[in-house]
Length: 441
Ligand code: S3P
Image (cartoon, rainbow, N blue to C red; front, top):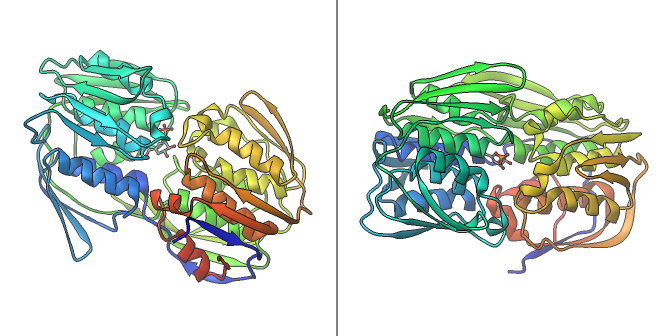
């Protein structure tokens, strides 16, 4: 099976109802927390993508068993630090920064050295952001230049920390929270706003955690060493996967789309706020609360007259995985769109800020870049007819999805490589595109 696709036709108008893949952040968190719960947790609608399968393989290697029965994952935990290992082992997080950073927080009491590895992309990413706070807890970590592979050996004498998390990284915050679970006393994190699924899950599990919020920071206090019981969880749809279909609909002609049961937690919906500022009319229907998370059907229709946006940097963290696709909307909007402080984009599966800028240049859009700030000169009349080939060296799933949506809405003849990268987060992406009428060869 070739690992590339061709798209040579724009998508025709459509009116459809779809589901997108389950939330990746919540899927990984639910597996890792189930591995620390007492008893058998039951997780339904778990995302079956490579990042999540690597999370399952990781807990298995650490001695936690799971089975899938009638579509539901049953994971048997033995409480905090209930991993069962008898010698030095190696675990591989594949492409997943979330898995790699969060699992370290659960290994802080390990008696044996654990070696953590990852794929080519993950091996280029920074781990100083988690190594630093973990070492304050008293954990020993060996690495070269704070990159994978790294070795961690836990401690019996962990001490609680007070930590300022200034990046706005949910992975760092969650790693510290996981370490705090294993540490006596109260750990306090003053954390710049970022997705809050870990906190919401711990609350749902009735774990002693206190959250005080102000405009910029959340102050989170966690009392360590409390056991929690096994749980049931049904994972909702992923707004990050939905965002590609939202933009597909917005930029197509005379189309309407409903995306069922998507997580619309406010720490994730920056894309909706930004696109609505640009003139989209995206609505939530059938809103409900599920274990602290907000879920809704998302309704979107095509819009011909999109306008530029001056994106407030306070939305950056809640749209951090969506900027590539937001840039595509800016390319078709009237006026100059401005985005600031996007340095974190370059710390993802690939250097997404650099790639986004190159992508826009490739399709003929004028860009100004000042460090981590960019101005995009939109062209509402943008139509492509040339041939394009997208090489995706670090196999970044979101670069693959972006390329498909650009091809389906702007025209031109596209060869898009690394089709398999879709398996990282959204294995049924191409099937879903075909379902709404997109032609892929
Ligand atoms: C994630 C947090 C974000 C995001 C990533 C998933 C998570 O990373 O980009 O795709 O599940 O916690 P940072 O926390 O490093 O910003």
